[in-house]
Image (cartoon, rainbow, N blue to C red):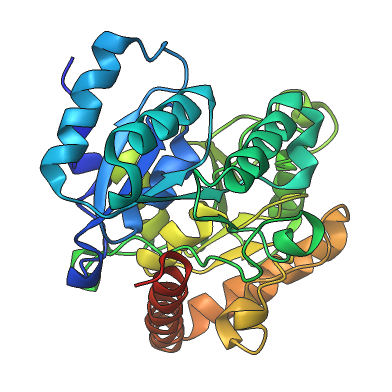
Length: 338
């Protein structure tokens, strides 16, 4: 199978910057969240598998493809045993011609999965042996807790989407809740809060809250099902606002995708010092993650702001995206030494 290089799914919404033309991002095609984040970064893109063994027959075409790109810097977005195997092969073949970096997208909450701890340990080992030039994280202050990591936060880009391509908003005041069913994603609390919010006419959810109708009327609820790609972006764009008040995040792509579609999105605290005075991020942050009554009030505050003055919201989002792109570009260039 030919290597997955610069496929449309990872290039059609990327930021284009000639300074990064010789930078290659390597991500896993099964890890949708990290793949989505990677797709917005400037630079070349290569997708590998996290699950299928990276046999010599598969590895050699990947190395040949990298040789043909004439890149000088490789950034692994997320890490796996396959990524580790590829790293060692790159260093063996290209020596010091290519500098290698890793960006981890993990939060310590996920350390309940031993796999994540094992990857951090491997990264520290590869850095200390000289195979990696630098280790970075999109989680604020990750480097303050773990040795060998770059001290500043790598800032994720929002997808690069022309505002002229935005879809018309729903006539109703609609709230999109694109959350998975798991404890960390906090879907039930978000839906209870949304259902009880008087500023919300309709609650659109990708997953149905099984059993909740037995104790709470769900007359506002509409099941959209699991959406991906342009279908997900269009649903985000039609909505008045999104809510993803999860219990642990780094820089959730659902929020950045919503911003790119001109829609504000509420999350829990992200501790991004770069945006601590940003009016959009202030409006889009709640601390009420396990109290549906108070979360409902924060949802109402955001819905009212978005519905009452759409132009002001549009301008606020545009200002934030402009600042984010500038800061993300500067931080990434500093991280890889451009």
